[in-house]
Length: 200
Image (cartoon, one colour):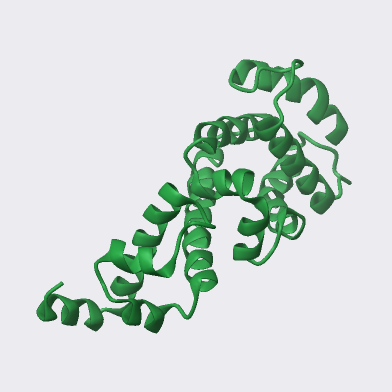
């Protein structure tokens, strides 16, 4: 990179960080967590290691920021799709469909499956610690379902939101014979038969 180009990047700190995060994401896609190094990321970005360390003090900080950025994008996209559905069962069905579509390509999901310990360490918490945050995603949807009368009025929203998240995680990651998780009609029937009665 020329001095002029480097100066332009340095003048826009967020752009420099984005450049490094993009490079780190490409390295993670190719190599996973264990085999990605700071040297690789600097080379991928076309910038010096010194410049990389100026923005990210170590590998954990860099990869953590990379995975969190992608995870936030996944949930933002999921929220946009799920919010277009008008019933809780339709929303959960859409969540399963979206997650199944993304499962093979979403970096965070793939790394959680292939390098769970490393992914947990990089993100600062394992799935146990992540569950409350993921359950929070479902709270407004459960509250809206309660307001519409789809579920009982005295339903404990926090517990129900966690249960919905556990159902989604189970369907996405541990498919079985009772439901075809890649067929939305099958998922909807399954949820109407088993999820909704528990909430009513």
